[in-house]
Length: 358
Image (cartoon, rainbow, N blue to C red; front, top):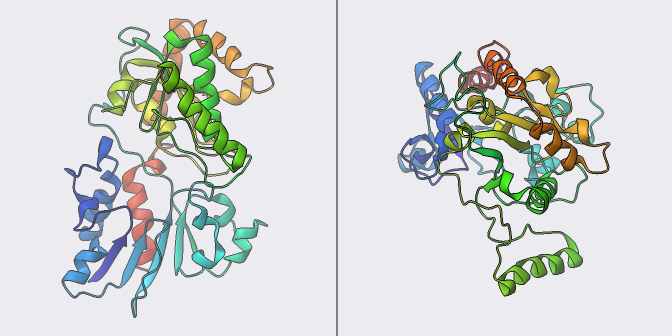
C-alpha cells in the first residue's frame, strides 16, 4: 500500500478532510475529501503529514499545497499542487523552489506545454508537469438540469461582487485585484442602490505598492473614519453562504485574480453558474473555448469604451428577462455537459492519483 502525506492549507490532524472544519466554508475542502476517498479505493492511505509523523510512518510521497518549505524525507517523492499564479503566491514562480519537486500538478498551459518558450517552463524543464483543473464543488442546493430562480423573480440583488479584500504580491499588469476595486468604486459612485459587496476584509482599503501606495492606503483608511463613513459603502459583510447570495442576485462581477494567463480558471465563474446568476467575467484569455460565450458576459467587450463600467451597467440594466433566461439556460446546459466534467472534484482527484501510481 502506498502512503501519502499532504502538507499545507491545514491545521493538521487531518483537518483538511473534515467536513465540520471551521475552514470548510461553502464546502471548499470537498475536493480533498474526494481525493482521500478515491485514494482509499485504490489502496492508497492519505493523511496530513503530521498524522503520519505521529504514527512513525514514512510516506512514499508528499503533496504540497503551495508556498510551504520542502521537508526532506528519505525515499519519499515530493509533488506540488500549484493552484495559484505567482502574482498571488510569488514562490510559485521561483524555479529554485519548483525544481525541488519530483512533479508539479498545474493548470498552467505555459508550464504544461513542453515546447513553450515561457522562461519559468524552461528553467524547470526537468520537473515533470501534470495537468489539473481547479476543482469546483457542487453546492448541496444545486440540482442538475434545473435553473435556480429562473428570470428576475426572487433575485432582489441586482449586481454583486463576492471576494476577500486582497492584493497581488508582485507588481504586474495582469493582476485584477485592483480592477475589482475599480468596479466597486464605480458602482458606489454611480449606482450604489444596485450593487452589493460581500466578503472578508472590506472594512479597510485595499493595500498598495510603494511609498505613494502606502500613503494613499493610510489616507483611504483614515478619512472615512474621520468623516464617519464606511471605507466601502456597498459592503454588506461576509457571505455566510455564497450560493444563497448568488441565488438571489442577477449579476456577479467575476474577475479572476489575474488576467491573460492561459488555463487559469478558478471557482468564481462556476459559482455563479451553479446559482443561476449571470457572471460578468474577466480573466482566462480563451475562456470561450472552455465555457460557451452565451453563458456569461465577457467584460472585455467593454474595455474599448472611455467608461467600461458605465457601458456594462447600461447593458445589464437594459437586459430583458427573456435574454436573462437565455443566459441561465446556456449555463444550465454547460453544467450538464461533458465540457464541465474536467472542472469537477472527481476528475481533479483522478488527475492527482494517476501519476502517483506510475
